[in-house]
Image (tube, rainbow, N blue to C red):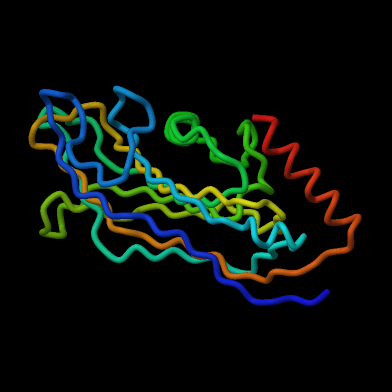
Length: 220
């Protein structure tokens, strides 16, 4: 099987936003979206990687490594009456099937069940890249509303894929329901990277992979 090197990248725009307590929404989403209408606690940015050209040539992508680049500072300021907790949950995901972003975020935040884990509707093999991070305030660092990384964990499978499209998500959940006119949220721009090889598999193996991809994409 002849292989050729490829590097796939997904770009996500920055988010520098303030909360409007009159309209109860974030004012300048800059391409980001609320994961559920009227619920401003989870925001996400989505893009896609088109592999249809490779799919037309019956090629499979074999991932060999992943990376995440997001130079910058995470900052979040909740409402003035928020005293119990404060933090950010950040999920970076590249998958071969589309996701219900709000379900992914709330399952992770409330039920401690990440995509591909037991109880998740998403199969492990569909997740080519997955990174979980949790940030919380750091009063030692003298920067306004600075959030410090305290937990980081990968959850990707690295499985080969014959999909014609990859879905790329950056999902941010604010760990508070209290926002007011002084609330701000700053998320740096990001690049998600998957390095790997494009190659041709034996016909039977490739057809089985296509069948499996179709089943996974249509079971949700």
